[in-house]
Image 1 (cartoon, one colour):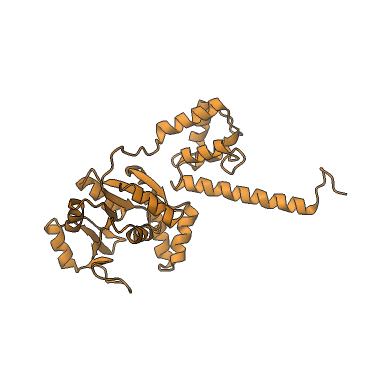
Image 2 (image 1 turned 180 degrees about the vertical axis):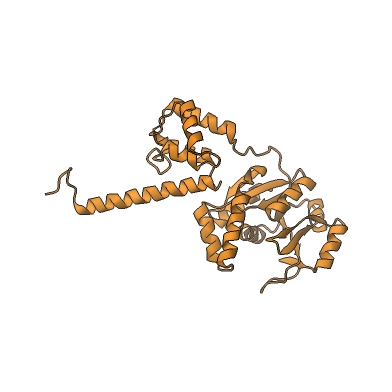
Length: 298
């Protein structure tokens, strides 16, 4: 008969599966911090709220080396400075150690502090494949009172795309004219291929009518809008996790392996720019993310 020292085989198998799942969950969290999908402070809060969670059972050494720019040598110096044992798990830190670690993170990697004021001109940007277009389309369908800006592009229309509804399709000569006549609020070459830009006049007309305006553009464009219109509200759309972003990109099936790799490298760089934005919204569910963005237009 099995006893505490000799559990039945089925119990050992279940315990092994739980241990593997926990390790995978911790590895995913570390990757999210490394890729800047999750801030160190956010992971720390999860650990403190539930010490038995994957975040809570993560060793402090693993946590620190997941943060970009912290290697093993720097990690050990930090632990000595904060008087934290390297064998400690995040959920098992004492109150003083928690405060010390939080203060250390806030000093070196301050979290985003949204501006108090908001503009009716809202820019939605984020990494490739995060779902900006899907969220913008939901807002357009459910909130027709919000003007969704239509971009000009030099690429050819895709099946089902309509001139003036999805894009203004122009050739390179016309795009050059729009730039020369200062008719674009922002413009950029995307993925080293086609040019995209945001016409000024429809935006100015909608704002003059008292409507809110949503621009769904890339990181380059968002930076240009901030330079041209400093009062604009910039919103960065995040994936729920790095693994989810990879799955969304692979699941689209529209790019080859080399193109996917290039876009993922670009996404990593884009995620690192989120601190330039006023608000962060996680696209875990399209409708929920869309409503969060809509709330920022009011």
